[in-house]
Every structure is written in structure tokens, then in C-alpha cells.
Length: 321
Length: 228
Image 1 (cartoon, one colour):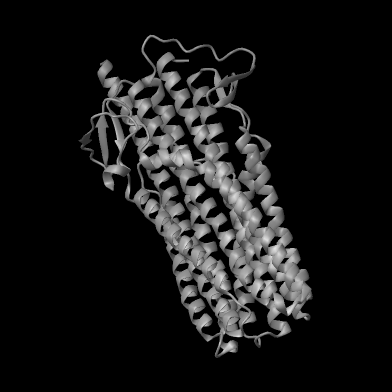
Image 2 (cartoon, rainbow over the protein chains, first blue to last red; image 1 turned 135 degrees about the horizontal axis):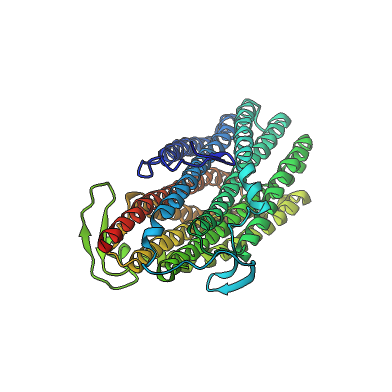
């Protein structure tokens, strides 16, 4: 029975590391479903555009639901990505168990592991950045504990907000073109749907943080198991920038939701409503873009951590210490 | 196309290796290093990220300016407002194009670490180096990225072309609005295809992790056998 790490159960050492990943399949299926929904909205949008001159009411009926369905489709794609990331976390633990199983046989014959005993030393500089040296595996950082706890609530809240946005978009579709009710409901739709998108992206960011936590913890676990000094990559600047950007993006996503509620309150005045919409649209896109930029930095940090891990394994294979 | 994608960083002779499982690999004496897309990814993720940040900042600025024109309520500004709607969307989606490309490149960089690192670990252990051929999921990631990029670039160019042609005439303003909604649909498809490509890229990482888990245990068995 594997132990639970946050919301993900670590596979037991007896589980089959060769088995195909169910997460991989499920993630791809969700992604294809999301793409299908978005293709449907393209057809809807082209149809609505053609109706604008002759039947504005017809266009006003179609455009809100294509918005709701497309954000739901894009949300499904992102949930699919999140499911695959969970699969990566599980596979990383399989990899840790495999390396623990194999390394003792791979260390050169006749080399005696250095004693793990001794005081923790100051960080040493390597090609990958500062590395701490200790006698045991490091404790998870607070940000890693937070990531492990928060990714699932973020995804669930995001999915609920997307669903609410879809329902609101259907309600907005039934309103007379250009009416106050239509403007009000569409403002609610946009704010809610983008809140959902942002929360799901935040969930993905926390999953990437969980992967970074797994790499750190797994690397420490392997070294401690081998009885050597534990070398751990200290949090690189890219990881700090990732956390800062993700938090900024999340705050912007929440702010756009609140501001859309304010804009919904101004729906009685068509000019005021259009003024709000003109800058809130780009603002909400930039909010998502900020979280996406954070995700880029998280992925870069993962590649850096992997580079360090391979270099450490090579060191162990060459020197045994 | 295939040979370019599979071109290795290190010029080493490779031979196809026969395995009893589903992993398709080549064997060599030394690590092959990164392949072409992985080297490109390692170089381009940062410039793409920088481009995205700049485009998002400009897009937000344009949106705020357009908003101030709408608030002014001057009918003479109708054409500018309609034009700016397209320009703002075009600039923002240059940002999305860049940030999604940066994500795909960063995933390629991760795959490069696995390929080069896995190879050097096998080399250090004194075994024949087995390197995964690019899996189908990896190819789908690249094709999706290219398709998503083409759709977004087409939509962005169309936005700028429409913006340049808007006059204050009623028919022109209507046409501008029609194009905006149609292009919105195209942009969404572009983003969706990019996201699907990212999903396939991450699925490739799962495939690679599975192979590494299997291979490192094989490596131990091979070395134990060699040592008798």
C-alpha cells in the first residue's frame, strides 16, 4: 500500500512500474473533448457573425453561449493537462523506487560510500546553482506543502466556476439584444468563466510545484537510502519568480471577477458598460497570461532540477559518494 | 523532416535495438545528447517568454486607451475604437502565441534533460546507451504547436488587416464587428490546439519516465551480470 502524499497516493514498491499510465489516457481524452467543444463554438461564432447585419437578436442569442462553451472547452483541456501532471507525479515516484533499487548495484566495486554523518555544510556552488549538503533528506519547504494541499481545491473550484459561467452564458443567450439584462448577465458570465480558467491554471501551477517538491524529496530519499551525503539543489531564482508571478496572476484573476461584478452593476448605462468591457477584456487575458508565464518558469525550474539530478547520479556512479 | 527532428547533438553511430516491450530505442556507445527540437526549445523558451510579457503589457495599455475613447463618447472616434478592438486582440494574442510557445519549448527542454541525462548515466555505468526514439506523442506535440501557431498567426494578421481597413462608415463598422467575432472563434481553436499539444508533450514525459524506470533496473542487472 503506497503512502499518501498530498492528494496523490505514492505507488507501493510492489506496484508495476512498467504499467501504462491511466492518467495519460484520461488526460488526452479530456483534451480531445475540450477541443471538440471549441470547434463547435467556432461554427457558432462564424454563424453569429454572418447574422449580425440581418438578425442582431439571432447573433445576440448565439454569442454568449459560444463564449461560455469555449471557456468550458478550454477549461476541459486544462483539466486534462492537470490529470497528466498527476500521472507525472506518480511516475516520478516509480522512478525514485527504481533508482533506489538499481543504484547500489551500479556504484563502482571497491568504493566505500562517504559517511553521511557530519554537520550540515553551507551551500556549495555548482553549474546548476547553490546546493546544500546534509546528512539526511531535506524536509519539504512550506511552499511545497502548500502546493501539495492546494492543487486539488483550486482545480475543483475552477471547474465549478466554469460550470457556473456556462450556465450564466445560457441565461445571457436568452436576453433581448442590447438590453440591460443581457449586458449584466454577460458581465457575470465573463467574470465567472475567467475566474474558473484562472483557478484551473493556478491548480496546474500548484501541481508543477508538487512535481518540484517530488524531485527534491525523491532525490534526497535516494541519497539517504544509499548512505551518502545528501546534496539538494537550493530554490533557484526561477522558482522564486514562478511563485511570485503565480500569486500575482491569481490575484489579478480574482480582481477581474470582482471588477466584472462592478461592471454588471453599471449595465444600465450602455456607454459605461462598454467602457468597463473595453479594458476588463484585456485585463482578464493578461491575468491568465501572467499565470501562464509563471508556468513557463516552473517548467524551466523542473528541467534545471532534472539536470542536477542526472549530474548527481553520475557523480554517485563515478565516485560512490 | 524525420531526420532533422532526430538529429542528435552528439555525432555517434546508432543501431536499432530490439526490446521485448513497447519502447522503441536506438543503441549507441555514448549519449546522443539532445535532438533538434530539444536544442531549439532550450534556446527559445526565454525569448518567447520575454516577448509574451511585452505583448501583454502593450495589449493592456491599448485596452485602457480604447476604454478612455469609449468613455469620451465622441462619435468621430468610432472608427478608431473599432480599429483598436482588432489591434488590441491581435497584440494580446501575440502574447498568448509567445507564452504557449515558451511552454512547449520548456517541455522540450525537459525532454532534452531526460534524453541527454539518461544517456550519460548509462554511459557512466559502462553500459550500451539506449535512447528512446521520438514517441508519437512527441510528434503530435510538435505538429499541434505548428498548427496552433499557424492559426493564431493567421488570426493576428487578419485582425491587423481588418483594423487597417476600418473607416467610420456604418457598413465598415458592421464588417469590423463581424470579422471580430469570426476571428475570435479562430483564435480559440488556435489556443485549444496549442493546449492539446502541451497535453501531448506532458504525456511524452510520462512515457520517458516509464522507460527510465524500466531501463535503470535493466542497467543494474546488466552491470551485475558483467561483474559476474
